[in-house]
Image (cartoon, rainbow, N blue to C red; front, side):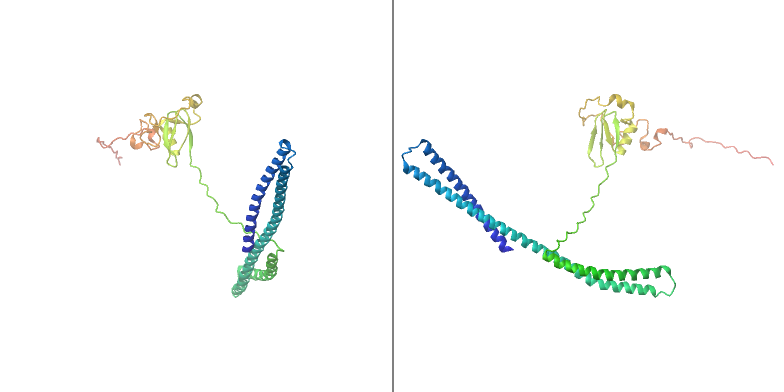
Length: 312
């Protein structure tokens, strides 16, 4: 194989050199033909010596070009023949590797088969030694013996057939087995972070699930994290898409960019900035904050309890 490949490389280099010489010879023939044609059109027709010289030049270039064409044709045929031999040699090497791999696998099977048959018989014998009448154990023993007998017969036939395949693959009578497809790991697709689309009545800012700072312009739809959406709804900076104001005000700002440094932009990640004024700070995150509970100190004043005692 190495000798063939080396010889093929040499022949290809020689073919490339001949092709370059042929190009030069073709150019020289074109120039000689043009010079002869020019002499015939504008030269002295009585000057036979010049005409003969030009004709000899054309004949020489034509002969040289024809010789190079013949050499290139023969060399290309030789290269094609060597390429076929290289391909055949490469196929033979691949067939030999495939046959050797199959033969190795069959040797492993033949070494493992007696151990399996012996273990199956021993397991069935152990199940049948149980003196207590047990239906599942008896059926299991029968199943193992039946499977062991079928495997023994099938393996004898299959191994004999596969041993013949080894020779057929090596000789080219059978195709090379296709490689087993590799099991690619399943790419785990991370679920998209949960968001809620709302309509912004004020310009807002918030951080998404990845921690990136986001901005939303007033009178546009914004996709907020659940926590930011809850705070925005609580302070009135955003409203649901069903709010009638969305139909009238959407796009009223004309699509300008958000001024990130504006003092009136609402930070939806800030508990303090989104707390309604009527809710006490300690109860800002309490769902019952809007109930307006008030604490009454009942220990500040004395109270008298009267107990009625029934008469006997």
